[in-house]
Image (cartoon, rainbow, N blue to C red; front, side, top):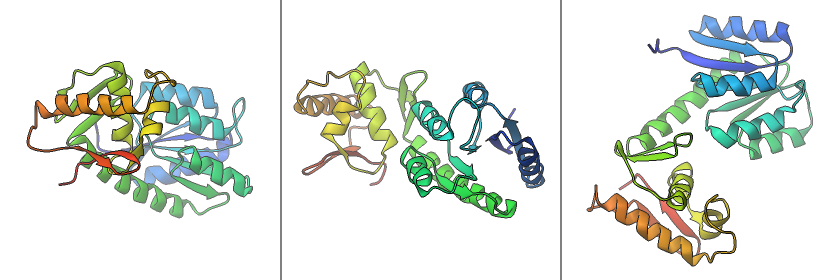
Length: 227
């Protein structure tokens, strides 16, 4: 049973700092799990639901920037990088790979609480909006439209999944082609138009009065949940 607490995973190889952060966050009603090993952290993320990850970069066995990449392969969970490394390149790469925020050590734990609440308020609101219409289950390879599972081919799942991840933003035909696992890279970008047409037809079975996938001239397509 969900107790309503924010569930935070801290991947940090400094046990003293992890304990300090954990104790402080728990004062604000957060449920905290701490691990030192990045491989264990990645494993736990697949076994238990968390709302946010606080990630150190200097970890045993795997660099934190690689951990960000590994997490993003399977999850959109918010990530705050917490690092003593002062190289601006780390921050740039971390954000490019999908981190939501970067906090250089040392910092006041009060600021961390504020950052967590701000990120979860933003991502929680976005998630609520998006899941009201489209729900993407990567692990189960299922996409639900208004709670109804769509019958999609592997290529259609890839394309619609990418559009859901970029909700209300334009995605180029080239990106849809090359980031889809089940479309041959040698295929023409025109094949994307055919796949989009099939997806639209399947969505229209349940909502014929509205077009959710819109063309973006000179770019590609945009999935929108806005009128």
